[in-house]
Structures are given as structure tokens and as C-alpha cells.
Figure 1: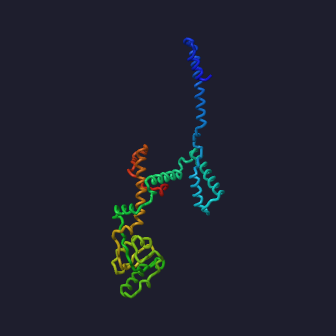
Figure 2 (figure 1 turned 90 degrees about the vertical axis):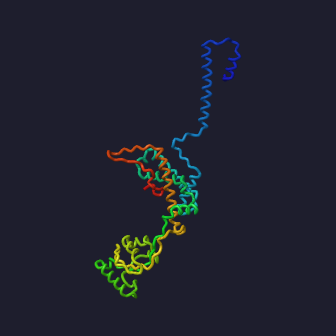
Length: 320
């Protein structure tokens, strides 16, 4: 009997009010009937609902598969993968995902510095993306940055010079003496060609004009400092370097001025991107400091306070 027909029979009955026993029996039958309907509806809803993801379902979207194939193509011989190669690439990706999921389940990521660093690096990439670092850099933005930091961009002084080299290898014991004798000859006879004196200086980095930065690798900082301070037009006293002894005559100096935007543009691009990355990391660090509680327990006498800003690391160096 349905709930409706039961209700109708009760309503249409001319019998006086039922006894307590009849009322309890009637109520039990109605509740049982409604419970049956509820169970049936619940079962239907459960059958139609999507399965609950317990972490053991590997979802691979079309976009993800395309990304896997693109990566395999970039590292392969052919830029167009065959169907066989696509199946192999996707199978390997899924196999790795299964190993990864099971490793996480077993806690194999715990205490692993390599895994930790990689997650940190991916978090940094995520923060940089949110900060717009990956967005195209416009010339207008670079010029604005350049104007705000103009004092940083100074043309380094350049020198043009003649050079006589006395090698430590050729003259291990008397290098300074030999260099001084060459200098005496150059001072006495202006017709002596510097290239006819001394030893070959094995470098191809020297240009017509050189900045101190250009010269440091070949001469060392101490020698470059003396070279750039030499009086124009005069031969210097022998200058020591890790490779031997040098006589230098600076013929011209130029530079030491603020750079134009075009001259500094390459450095401006690098600095602008670096500042954007640091800004993104500072923003993330500031937010996480507020959202996480820090509990640091140190030995007696040791103190620690978290800095106001991030360490300055960026995603490219996040795992270091």
C-alpha cells in the first residue's frame, strides 16, 4: 500500500478516534515507508554522483598530455611524435606519477632535501607568475625604471694603452730587473717599438679600449688599479700581476659619465627583471609570515627573529 492510499484510508474512515495501540502501529508503518523511500533516493543519488577522489585517481587532461608530448618532442630527435612515441611518453609520465603518489603516501618525501628544494623552487615560480614577472617587458617600463635608477648606470672609464709584458715563466728570478731595463730603453729612445720588447701576452680579450672590468681577469685587481691611475703618456714603473710584470703607458682615457638609456639598456633589463622577482618574493614572504605561526626553539642564549623581507632568492636559485 502506498503512503497516499494509506493516508486516504485513514482520512475517509468514519471510525471514531483510534486507540493508542492503533496510532503507534499506524505511525510505525508510515515511518518505515518513508525510510524506504529515503534509502531508495539516497542510493540513486550515490549511484549518479561522481566517485570521491581518495588521492588514488590519476587524472590526465588533454592539455596535460599535450604538454607531455611537447616536452618529449623538445628533447627528442624529431619534433613530430609518432603515435607509438606518444603512447610511450604518456605511459612513462603516468608511471612516474604512480611512483610519485605512492612515494608521498609512504612519506618518502619527508626529510629529503632535494624534494624540499624542488617544491620551494616551484613555489617561487608560482609567486613570480602571480607578480607578473613572466609578462612581456615594455620599453616604457624599462625607461621608467632607468630614470628612477639613473645614478646606478654610469659609463665605466675606459683606457687605451701600450703594454710590455715580462713573464714569470721566462724570467722566474729576474722579472722586475728585466722589466726595469725595458722601461729605461723606452724612456731613453722614443723610437723603440714596445711590441719588440718583452714576452708574448697570451690573451685575446684586450681591445683597443678597455674598462677596468675588462682587464681584471688578465691582470688582477691590484695591477688594474695601478694601470688606470697611471699618468697619461708616461711609462709606468713595473707593475706586478699573477703572471709577471707589466709596463704600461696610458695614451687616452674616456668615460666616467652617466650612461644613456640605449647604452645601459642591457643592464636595465637584467636589473628590472631581478627587482620584479625580488618584489614578488617579498610579497609572498610578507603574506606567509602573517598566515603561519612560527615556533623556533633554540638552545639557551641563542635568539632569532625573522627578517622583514625575503632573502632575495628567486626561482632560478630557489633550490640552492
